[in-house]
Length: 266
Length: 261
Ligand SMILES: Nc1ncnc2c1ncn2[C@@H]1O[C@H](COP(=O)(O)OP(=O)(O)OP(=O)(O)O)[C@@H](O)[C@H]1O
Ligand SMILES: [Mg+2]
Image (cartoon, chains in turn purple, cyan):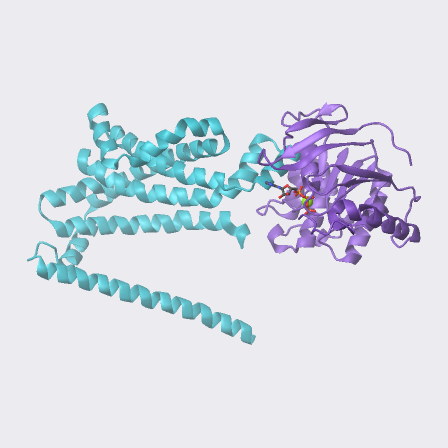
């Protein structure tokens, strides 16, 4: 698959929470419209920070981020591109039921009243959590909450979906079902997905392109095109081979090199 | 019934029994101390018996209920004004740095000024109308409410703010569904505190400037050197206030804090 265009355009991004220690440093990357992009990096390198910046909730120190030619940030008006965001933590309203949590964002996204309930049902079913429709989030397990958060992000059918390790709290079998569904869903839509993960196999299975980051503060280390045709199988030996190559490739950069001898930074 | 249920039932009844015992012991102790004070003070502190008699007398006079009603009404008016202004101001301060910078010193000052000063200044400036005392009370109460609410708003989860921004929740939705519910425990604390303070203050206001109301009654009894009636009237009104609390505040609290359990 070839990628052209700069639908999400990140240039020379510097982000720092305290103004002193950088969390992301001089990072540039482009994601094409309709692309499934994975972001891979060691723990604490700044992956979540990157998504925060793309979504506009964190202001960069310097650098620019544009989506569809419009700068993101505080002034994100109604004409800017709608974003669905699966945060690393679920970020549901504990005092609203599962259905209400989704309904609130659907209404904010301007979904017609008549469509709200069917939409909720559809996505809850897709994520196999229909029976929790009227449950308080605090009564759900971590994985169930995360699936509600995914349902919420997808239900508004946004042009851009940001996902921060959405399947890392699920058991492996459920995670596989979810990955498959996400791959199918993406193929049927023309959504642009930026998917953060620390699982190389997951990135290879889902993405058309993988952005590999350096240790923190994150810069772009390398970009890898995944040319394995879809539909892919999770156990595909080609993925195994690519996985081994990537591990080999990042070893040094992520601080596990033969001559680095030091612990990776957390 | 399973053994588990039996055990949990016993725990509950055990807990209640214990609380009841503690309550009884504490009350008896308080009564004993009072009675002792009566003996030591040469009769200036009325005995429990005299207070009981006064209670009986007062409870059977019609005018005391008019006074209670007058005082209750005043409490509600000031309480409603102080909580709504205080909550509005507290939320605005918690969400907006400029509003915070402007009002913070005023609130800090307001907390430090003794309540009596508000009342006396109001009487000096506005006269002894009913409204001047009530305005003084509202002014005295607002800083307390603001203080509690600002704390609650400041302690909210920034993650939910970010979520609201990403999904572009409308301002009102955000205020009610995201901020409001996080702040609701402190709102309840604020209203309760405000209600309790309102009662303490109204007695002062009425004693200083009003001919009617429970506070005025308590003050009359004091001037006529009838401490038994003074205490009886206060007690009667405390019972009424506890009833109001149980009827209004308890159910509201249950409704708003249900999701936590
Ligand atoms: N809210 C915050 N305030 C201050 N520092 C933060 C905050 N969030 C993250 N950081 C710091 O920024 C750096 C990058 O964090 P980030 O959460 O982006 O990493 P990550 O790659 O998502 O890690 P993980 O894989 O563990 O989720 C870390 O050093 C972290 O300590
Ligand atoms: Mg992260």
